[in-house]
Length: 210
Image 1: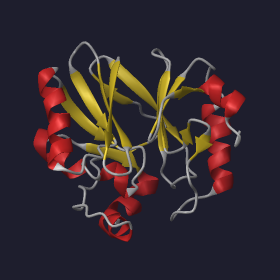
Image 2: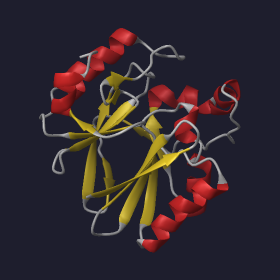
Image 3: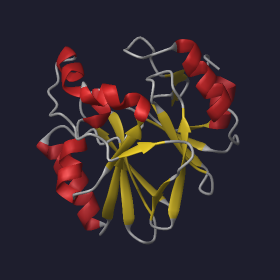
Image 4: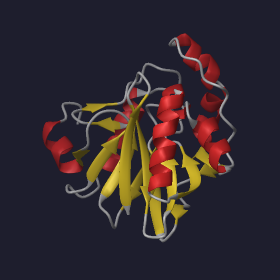
């Protein structure tokens, strides 16, 4: 499985494109806001002859769904999110206005993510880990064979997601991190929703919240 990260919008959201030898790909947290950002994403997909099959959101805060409508319409593909964040998704436009952004209402999800069903594309699959705390329906995506996890805004390099937004819960977030992420092997790389990559082992040693 291969991975490409883009840093989009003023909040520097990490948007991930994941694909394998079949060229099927998924787009995780499309934060592309401007025409230039949309073009960069589209150009990468075209140049690498990728075939998008799904949009997946780790959670529904507005900065992570800014490009949902663009990607879903451009490639005529379904979107997926955890049920716990559907209400946040429905209020993305109101959320964005509070922070000085404008986002067109993203499409409602075609699929509700659960831990019982992996996210699949090509010959690959990602395990869904429900990690509430930053938001009620926050999830992480774990690639066991490739030893990496997309942590959304649950875990960052030497930090954790904020819990002062609607639906946030500090104790719940710490529980999610300890029971769902810190139980993964130390060598697993962590690709977060903002900032640089890290690893489970590094966060066990250096993260002051853990």
